[in-house]
Image 1 (cartoon, one colour):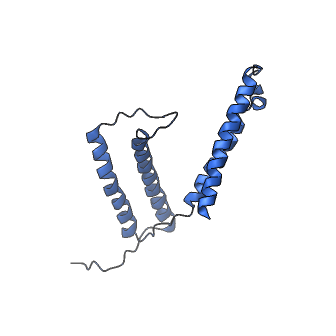
Image 2 (cartoon, rainbow, N blue to C red):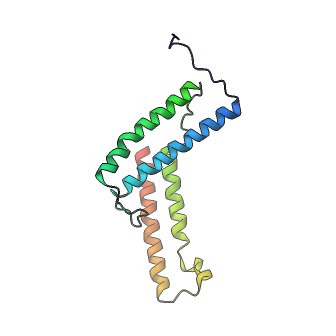
Image 3 (tube, rainbow, N blue to C red):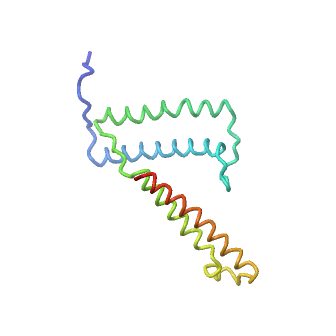
Length: 151
């Protein structure tokens, strides 16, 4: 009978260990996508991507099994002596970056940027400008509030 105190050492070469790690990380991201799909029905998204048709039993099955799969992913790495990489991206930084990208995307909705899609009717131009200004103000205000709370 083997001792369970024996350290886990991988017999895989570095490239194989890297491939294993990358594959398991991909599985974890797909599981996170499933969790986001399930959560999407609970949000007030303006443009939902998914029809919230996962029933209660299926939802319970998914939410109760995903943690088990994740524990297995971690265990598989440990058995090969592969350390789990630590997160490197700040959530705050990612949120701020997404807000900045959202502001840029809104800017592209100004009439001067829409010329390539055809002439913007004169009556629509002021409405588009106001919409962009208001959306950008909302995004900038949120960004500023987050920055103030951070300090």
